[in-house]
Length: 164
Image (cartoon, rainbow, N blue to C red; front, side, top):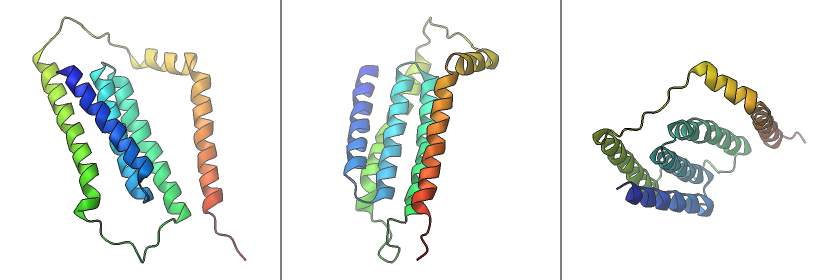
């Protein structure tokens, strides 16, 4: 069953990513990308990596998508006069992909709860996790934080109003 769920979620991830690339409206593309990130998080959970799955949801689907939305709003790419209420035709692909991801997650959690395996996960304290994260990977975290800072400064530069 887990292999079938993996292939279903992989298909959802690929389809949502292709729709995000092909979509002309930036907000719709962001919704497709968030759907792709959520299905990828369920794949990580399926592969017994719940911490990476949570990072996928918190960092990518949360923070990065908020940053993308901030850039879209700062650039004012759309014309508010032409924007109308989205129809079901616009919402259906994202709702369908999100529904498949949610059903797969529910099936995975129910299946994992039914079979209690002999594998016991090692509990890691917060102190050990922080020491590993900031000690061993400290430079990588600083580089990522600088990239996010540059992205924010770039968004502010692109979105500033020019005075004639």
